[in-house]
Image (cartoon, rainbow, N blue to C red; front, side, top):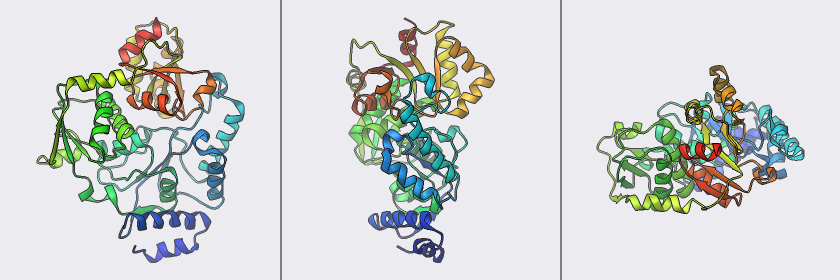
Length: 395
């Protein structure tokens, strides 16, 4: 792999330990994937922020890099394991919180912004079409590639952090035009809405395998639905990019986009996903939306659906600190909390020590949230539209 003279100096250690270690990681990746060279990036998004995921070895690794390291591009953080301001009120264990705060301190020392959200594009890190970036967090990756038209591979936490410190990443995979073409065309049976797109994404993620899907037959889809669709695709199939005819930017630029394989989704297949992601007759300990983190529009929708009724079950909305701040200025957060809904920031039920809070079952409108709650955290799950979640919460 070709390296510029500056990149060689970085690899040789002239810029310090953190830069050298980062370049070693990136060069190894480049050689594995036969990249010809590096490409400079515009931004990075770092996962592996929760102490639950990192553990002691991960924490020590970040603290080592922070001794002399500093990111070279705007860099944001994925959710951690606690709400930094309300962890005591919400019941998070003190010992876990202490470790988590050490993690955050190390990342901040590296010059990374304390966004703590899986939707960095709603918190100031919004790349432009064609920008090369290095993002980790599956739902953020697929949104950046598909909806924004930026270019990132499915980075892990260490490789995204290395790219942020070095300011570049190997030029391979989805950074190249030829790897962004669809491999399967998917026609949907009828217009969907809300969590229907989450179910569709979960279904197509499994059937597409490693092929990039091109959806046909979608007329209108909101940004919130795009995020539910993408998160589910990335969850069940590890898909980093999708196209929607006439809607997503690369499909608009290439109206003659085609794929050799075709698949027509049947309505019964969507219903089967609903069944698969539901443990029936479960009375959930926690009802939540915000996987990916909720937008201000979702906060407003939830509030309107409540119709001034107080919730009678533990109900949390997970969102970024930036979105909560906007919600506070608009008076939405105060009204939600008055009705018993907790607007929780900095974390999510997937990366938080959720079982230590006494939660054994959840209800959500997110296919990703449902799947990981069951398979990562061992919880019973209910998967339902936001309207049903509200009615369940106020019963």
